[in-house]
Length: 157
DNA sequence: GCCAACGTTGGC
DNA sequence: GCCAACGTTGGC
Image (cartoon, chains in turn purple, cyan, red):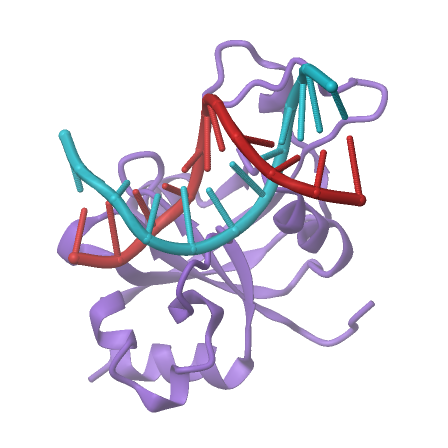
């Protein structure tokens, strides 16, 4: 288990939930995760105080990194898995032993501009990022502090 | 809207 | 344990 601050990139489709929504809500459960790999990372590796880039996926030309947030809770059972009205109910999840977890995130800031996926691809510094690897489908992934810092720095240019 | 790349499910 | 069928993600 890591002790020092870790850095993440977290995807959301802006039509579902955008950085503007998080700015308004300030704090929000990052729910709806239905991927075991991602769940395990939230459970085993994420810690309160970790920082994350907010990434808009499936947003056409606006696809890219748009903001910064902080992890504000340990992983806990995602209530939406038991809600038939939610986008991703899971009837097979046992309330006694919930299958899916979420964490709370807190808004930190919106970048002065979108650092687009197209742009991210042009930086050699970032070429090892999982985000840029072909076939990557994780909606949350760890990134290096240097990558986190680099992207924020580019946003200011 | 298309489709490539993956993940999951379930029959055997 | 294999693998075909199916579902989802997400870039384009």
